[in-house]
Length: 280
Image 1 (cartoon, rainbow, N blue to C red):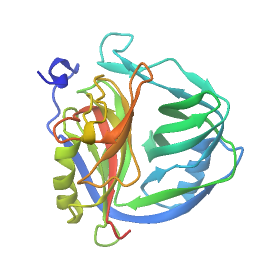
Image 2 (image 1 turned 60 degrees about the vertical axis):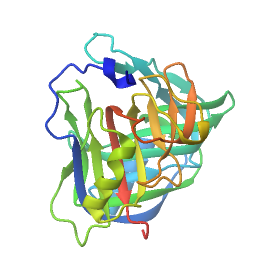
Image 3 (image 1 turned 45 degrees about the horizontal axis):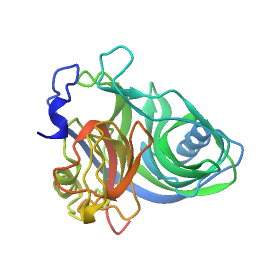
Image 4 (image 1 turned 90 degrees about the horizontal axis):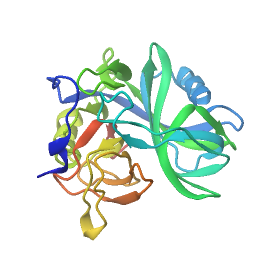
């Protein structure tokens, strides 16, 4: 019996399991200024760049006061298989690793961020609330600005969540060197990614940045498995579509890290990602 066997989403299974949009990405260093709310600073940067969507790597970002949530098994109304914990608060931190997808919600810029960070209370991980995170010091972060499609928040009938979906948006301004994508429940991350990247940009070894939730996870080299079916997950530096190291946190705050094994990391709700050419 696999961990996924007892997961039952409330709605009908969606016909499309991988929403993939090829396009053109630019790698840019963004300065996020001290004292700003993370969501506001990123929205202003997106307006300046004039891109459709982006993936941010926020490693090293200094935080002031910030709020975040953890994964939770089941929703309060009993309709969804997972939900969010109560809001947790921190006063200061430095992000060890963080990935954020940037797109639109009701026409306005929005971002979704999973992170692991160091604070006075030790290491923490979870889902940062972008409108409730203050930037603690001027920080340079990596932005992959994307044209040709965008992440847009949609109501997903299968899971009952409002989630980002990768949608096409006009013609990309050149030959694709990147793609944004979102995966439906039960899509195995390791098994999916090489073929997805090959179809989208013609590479089996593309760089890979993403975040989402997995139904447990098993790792190479004997690293402890994450047995929980409920999690917040982000890719780690060096992730490629043919080798995927991740950091996971479960509802109890347990943290797990390693390179995923094939067949052992199915998506729970969604996984948002960008693949980019190794030359970018």
